[in-house]
Length: 289
Image 1 (cartoon, rainbow, N blue to C red):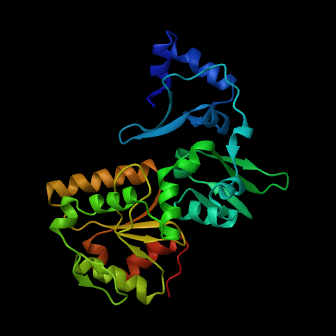
Image 2 (tube, rainbow, N blue to C red):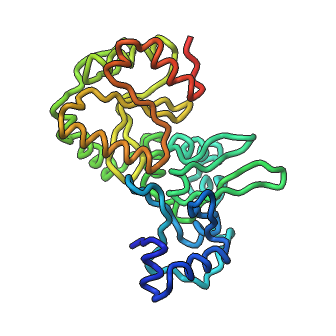
């Protein structure tokens, strides 16, 4: 579905932008904080979303055919329990899968929706006991990222998902730099620097994945991923190469767009990994002995 900014939508409806901003404010779909327009849970249920522009930052977008008279209804959403019933899986496992996707985080005895979760239909609510919880738009049960996570966990990948894996893994960069260096914990990495990083994580008992495919619309792999804190790690090693630099900037845009937690490493960090990497990990509450 085509999505456009509030200003563009106002132009389509032959309204002044400030008129439409007032309509959305009166409906409690948006509010202004520190000079920036932010989307409320009601606005998200009405169809609003956010996009990221590397120059201007995050901004709100709406469906081209947005109905201004609609009244968002929370009854049209699904809880983790309802999603679990759909897949015949417990709500605990559903929350685990949603957490692995980076869509929710544990907090205050409940669950908090992340930026990535909001982009996939998550809406933050609070129970009477003040515990936070998340409900989801009904189309979450057909969300390809959630389906992939469930299918991978149950060993039931569809032919289409397996084919997508093969296509993704055949990109030029991965072909040009094959993973043929074996680490002490059994991973195969693409460079000596990645081997050193992997070995550091392994020796410090930090559970991690190598080249994990991100469950986002864009086709992208991270260098390393620490699931306990939902932290991604990227090592930038060939910044003098123009194509590599373009790839790096594109990845940084995607990390910013989804508000993922990212640790960046370069050659100077590798030279003093025990101190620099450990300090960066601690900022994300990852203990290093």
